[in-house]
Image 1 (cartoon, rainbow, N blue to C red):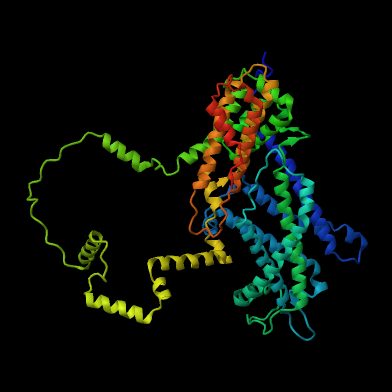
Image 2: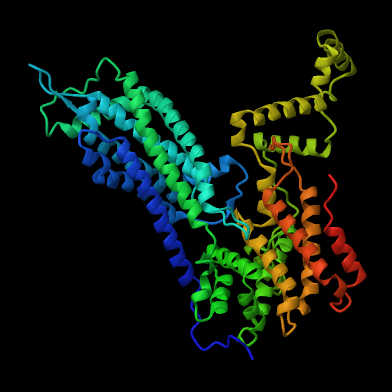
Length: 606
C-alpha cells in the first residue's frame, strides 16, 4: 500500500522556500543592526554615559544606510556564476542595464546620506559647519564639508562599481557538504576589514584627482545655490584660493569612510552567507511540514524559476544522503498521477546530466532560425515557370568606367591570381636591386623579423605582454569561463544543480538496495551507470580538445565548474560500481559497459 496517496492539494515548493529565505533575511538584518550599534558607539561623544552606550538615533540611521543595500540584494539576487567571455563584455552589458544604474543610485544616495548625518552630529565638534561666521564679517560658505560630502559620493561609486563588476548579487549555492556558517563569518572578519580599508584609501586617491579636475566648481556652485535662500551669502560663485586639503581632514574622512565601507561589505557578506544556507529547518528538510512533502519537492524540481529548482535539488540531495524516512517515502510513493515518485525524480535528475551531453553535441551545429524555416517553406511551394522576356537579353549594358568598377576589376584579378604580389610584377633587375638593398642595410635578424613568421612571433609576444599587464585583464578571454559557457550552455552557471543531481541519483540508487521494497530503482541503475560513464568520458575529452583563445594569457587550462562535475560523476560512478558490481548481469550490464565504467573511474594521468 502506498504511504503517500494524495488527498490534499499539493503545496507549492515556494511556500516553504520563501519563509526560510525570509528568516535568513531577518538574521542578515540583525547582523547589520549589531554592526551599526558598535559603529554608533565608536563615533559617539562620551560627554553623556547614557547616550554613549545607547545611541539609538545614530544606530538607526547607520542601519538604514546598510539595510538599503540588503533590499537591493533581495531585488536582484540570482544563482549561478557569470560566464561572460571578457571583462569588457561584462562592462558593456552592465552599462546598458537598468539594474546597474539602480545599484549606482542606491549607493550614491545612501553614501551621501551617511555623510550628512555624520556632519549633522559632529560638525560643530570638528569644525565642519557649512556656514562660518567670523567677527565683523558676513556669513561665508565652508568648503571643508563640501569636500567631505563629495568624498562619500566617490566612495559610493567605488563600491557600486565593485558591486557590479564582482557580481555581488550572485548567490552560489552549495552541495551537501557546506561549511559552518559561524566559522565562515568569523574567519572572514579580518578580510572584510582589510577590504574596507583598501576601498576607503582608493576612494580618497580617486577623489583627490576628481575633485581637483571637475568636481570642485560644480559642488561649490550647487552648495551656494542651495544655501543662499537661508543665509546671506555672496552672490559671486568665485572659488576659494586655497584647497581644503588638510591631513586631519583626510584622516577623518578615511576613518568615517572605513566605517561605512565595513558596514556595506560585512552586510553583503552576511547576506550572501545566510541566504545560501542549507535548505533545512530545525535539522529537517524544509518540506517536512508539508501535507505532501514529496509533492511539494517535485513542484520545486519542476519549477520554471531556476533558483527554486536549484534549492529543491539541494534539499533532495540532503534527503538522499541523510534522511532515511524521507528516502523510503520516495521509494514507496507509487500512486502519483504523473507516475511513481522515483520515476519522476529519475527523469528530472537524469535530464540535468544528459543536458550536458546535449550541449556538447550541439557545438558546431547551425541552429534553425527563422531564415532557415522560411527557406524550407519556400522550397515546399510549387514552382511556377516564368514566361520568357520579350526584350533582347543578348544586348549588354556598357560597363561603367569609374573608380568602383576599377576596384572590382583589381580585386577580381587578385582573387584569381592570389600568388601574385606587386613584387612579382617588377622586372628581375628591380627585384635584384631590392634584394641587394635589403642585404646591405638590414641584418639577418632584422630580415628574419620582417618575414611572416617573424611578424607573427612579434605580434604574439606583444599580445602576451599586454595580457600579463593589469590592463590586459579587460580583454582577456578566460579558458574556464569559455568552457563553462559552452558545456552548460548558459551565461550563468550554477554548478550545484548538476553536482546535486548526480548525488541524488547515486545516493538513492545505493540506498535502494536496503530500502526499495518494490524494486523500481534497480531497473534504472544500468541507465544511470551508462549515462554517468558517457558524460564523464565526453566531458574529459571535450575539455582536452577545447581550444584556447589567443587572448587568453593564462596558460592553465582549468575550469572549476567542469572539474567539480567530473569529480562528482567519478565519485558517483565508483559508489554505484561498488554497490551494484556483483549484480551486473541481473542489471543487464555487459562486460563492455562495466569495463568502460571502471576505466572512467580512474584518474587521468597528467
